[in-house]
Image (tube, rainbow, N blue to C red; front, side, top):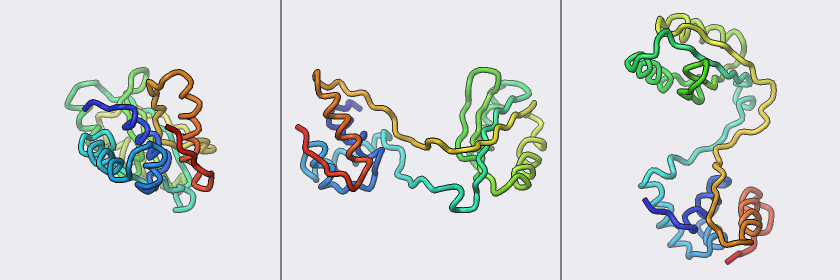
Length: 182
């Protein structure tokens, strides 16, 4: 799908605040509310917008421990990799899973209530799996930043970068006055 500057403006706005109304988006992007809704539907249908989610505080829901786990498989065969990917997808304690290059084969982000729960998870998920050679766990001490917002670089005319940065920052603070930039 071919995207233009207006699509990028929409994406930049909604990835920092997906609760913006069509009217607010129309002010930011410079299109009518209906045109913004049509474009968003097209971006969703094309798979460019993969989902609309809320970022929940792990501590607030009783899962304060976050671990980063590097996993090394016994062998890197397609069937083993595919099996492990499937196991990642069906395991709710795994928040994110990445198939990576380097010393490890996978990097996982895992959530737990406490170390006892994490130890039980490791016994069930890692030690019971013959395809896993080993894993290394790093415990997160402080969640400094959690974001799914991609840095979208626009081919804006010279000088528009600062104005566009103002638009993007305005969308992340709902109490900050928005200004229309055309």
